[in-house]
Length: 543
Image 1: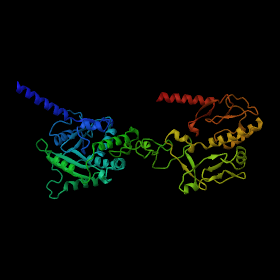
Image 2 (image 1 turned 180 degrees about the vertical axis):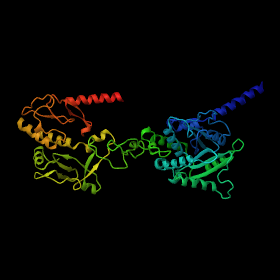
Image 3 (image 1 turned 45 degrees about the horizontal axis):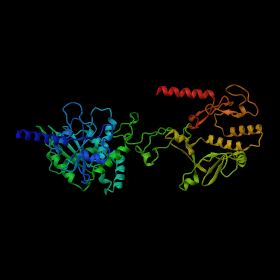
């Protein structure tokens, strides 16, 4: 009876041990963190936050035995990371476990070349895991090292330096970690297993010959692994299974104990780094915008927005607006009439290190409406800088003035990142601003009779109206109902087609961005209003 109880106790202890020695899902295949905070991360690993740790991850092609390698190297053959004999991959996303003997967080990743419908997310996730690791093991089972491995590691190094190093440096500074920029890169261990061919450096009496051959291959392929603080080659020739992992164990232990380039960190710092990278690089990756020139194209990490005018892509990293960094593009933009993205900058202010945008207007801020009307009739529209005052008038003594561009202003075409940009105060339709100024003047002329007031309105409007508007002098009948206009009757222009209408035939409003009026509703005729509604309905059906 006692023997039976003892047997049951041993079985229970073994079951409990195996239950405790099980990995957990840290990040799913959609790049979503499965751990809420550092406390939960610590609890699932079963380690103390007071004891600093290092992080090791493993990469390699699917079917090359990554999970088995981790189980044999760190957990005495216990299946902490799931393995399976089927053709389907048994590791999806990133799984984590803890080796207390080395104070090492071990991360198992999804295999390269495995079947998935989230290839882009998988590649970006692998780089995020590499970025938070201290040691990276690339596991390959092949008779000869393939170029794919060198290209993958070289491209990963380049992407790491371009996109992740600034984020990790900022995080290290905020956490008070005394590390230099060069020490942020992980150490690389290439674990190469063959069955018939000799491993690198076989027969050589020169120490480090295998690493020299690796560096030469990287150089020949033009993919230098500059981000890695060191590269170590571990080769094993397995003629008769099982694989000997003892050499790998020794190398890993030596790297973990080496603090000359990377020191152990609190577990909370590891989680903070992974969380920050997940937040910064988490936007959807549009397949139609990806130009595959490497394992890690820029589209994996940069903002997906494109300029509406020139279609240039924003060069900043994903989610940069959260840090107050505006959209930016590599090249110059091109002018698009519908977005009115051409602005004037005061030349004198620009040369003095200030950027002051000036807007064409009819009346100076220091003039009354009456005086402004008189000056406009004599000198045309003005450009007024809030620092330098009036810097330009379009006419001098009824003759045209020289073009302001190059003399008093600097012309610049701005990128339009959203429809809202076209409506900003600094980039609004100049003609609309002039008309607004005219309306201010006309509203103040209250002592005029209706006839002269109407004539003045028509004259001033024609002077500043867009080129596609029909001049008031040519409009005698309503373009809609064909009714002749009375002498004092106001003629309304449709902002879409530019024809003249009576009030009843043009009492609708809608946005007309294609004519440079932005997204604010403006007056349109009945016909254009109906056409606009039909267009919106058709677009909705197609979507």
